[in-house]
Amino acid sequence: MGKLQINKLSKSFGNKAVLDKVTFSVNEGEFVSILGPSGSGKSTLFHLIGGISVPDEGDIYLDGDLINGKRGAISYTPQAPSLLPWRTILQNVLLGAEISGKKNEQDALDMIERAGLGGYEKAYPHELSGGMKQRAAFIRSLLSPQSLICLDEPFSALDEFTRLDMQKWLLSIWESYKRSILFVTHNIEEAIYLSDRIIVLAANPATVKREFTIPFERPRDKNLLLKQDFLQWKKAIIKELSWE
Image 1 (cartoon, rainbow, N blue to C red):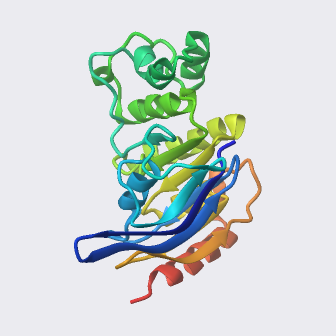
Image 2 (cartoon, rainbow, N blue to C red):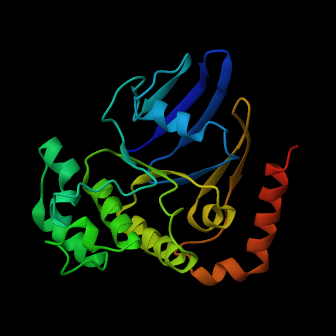
């Protein structure tokens, strides 16, 4: 479960074409990142997959079902953690499962403990650091019943040290649960370190310029970022992004 297929997706706002026949897939249990410049339609793409907007042309399939305009088919984690301030951390991470009627408090407590948030179950969001809030937001996504998680630059507001720790933590959790993930980032190193595949978008309007299959074995160590092979992949992707 968790196979996403985007087929020739196009979207315009007024006279401005934002997406033009975008086609790609996310396979079951796969981690796929989208890279592209600002204004390349990444947010519009997520709105379409999430059912907030409807494409002008093209189809979106999840596990074989057409989900054009269908809300609630995916789990979504935005740039800001979006935790409800009046709910405790435990109540926040259970929100998606609660709405779906599949609430399991023990699973939530186990995942909170594994995320390094043990002892904060009854704390409120304002009592947590930025990285801790993002961990809680991701746990909420994992506990939701949807088979695909869309992550929209979830680490962009964090400092570099916290970001590296969060990347390593995210991989460790994902490798245990293997949910399908579509990840948007502007950070090339982050995309290479996390992903099975990287989709590079051109802009104005967005089209799929190239896909990269990342060959590094899992589990991945953060020392990978210092290796020559990693640098070569980074150079190749930078070259692909520099089309002007």
